[in-house]
Image 1 (spheres, helix red, strand yellow):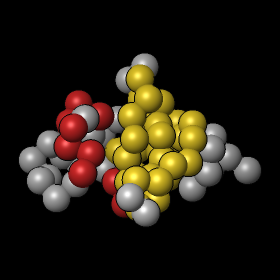
Image 2 (tube, rainbow, N blue to C red; image 1 turned 180 degrees about the vertical axis):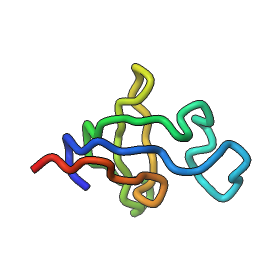
Image 3 (cartoon, helix red, strand yellow; image 1 turned 30 degrees about the horizontal axis):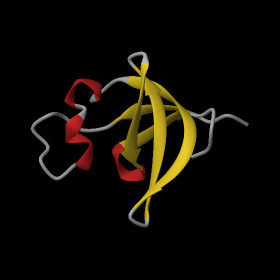
Length: 68
């Protein structure tokens, strides 16, 4: 997963094990990777989704289209 990839945010609001639960309105939404990041040694990605930038762990994202 790299900057420019189109991704879908996996999960549903009732998935309590996902750290992205701060952004439940983003579940199932399509976004674009705008920056790589790290949160306490966990690889994350900043995603432009629903007109805002939100940060999600890699395991919360599904690549739809790779930027190659």
